[in-house]
Image: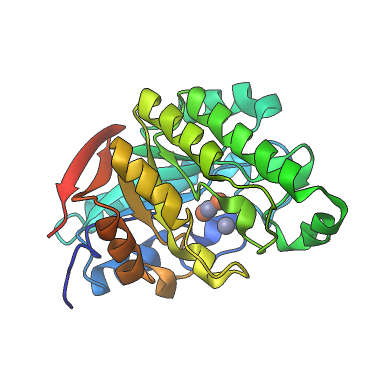
Length: 271
Ligand code: ZN
Ligand code: FE
Ligand code: FE
Ligand code: ZN
């Protein structure tokens, strides 16, 4: 397989432990090895803390088991691939204290921060998609991007997950988002954190990667680092559409991809 930078890393991989993905930690790592990855980050959904739906994230009592499985895989596969311990953690104000406490207990290599809930609406859940018909989409996008910015300012996270997730179901605003993207990118720059180009959007109604090219362009201009995630929910998703993602990254002016170890960012040159 030709590399072209598409096999540097996949940092956004779920496992069966979250209740809506297929594949054990080992199966995900083995798929990444087969596909020729140099390193892989498992980043399953952290317990939500704002609900107990077993189909959205692992139960709180299973988090230690998750960490143990990933660390075991790191040892077992270490001569073939670098396995990193990540987590996709929500940002949700009312439960943030509890979340921080939980995050502090484990030696994560990186934390992906994601906004999936606004008020009591899990807006990226296909089960709650009918609520889009009842809302003002402009206000929704503004609220979403403000929440992502608060997440960045919280200083807890290393990577902004799917930065424009609001578009997932292809419900579009009428306003121009460019100035708001720019404001968000400036906040990321100030905080020294990066974001992912996430290819999962291609598999949802929006049929686009997150974030949109204009966002990547501004981030590249301001020197905000970028990493790569497939948001795999099955072994076959790993590295999916990374040719498109790397094309976007490269054509926006990036020469490097960010990776993390023990919460420290390293930049790897694109070949
Ligand atoms: Zn998921
Ligand atoms: Fe997510
Ligand atoms: Fe995810
Ligand atoms: Zn995600």
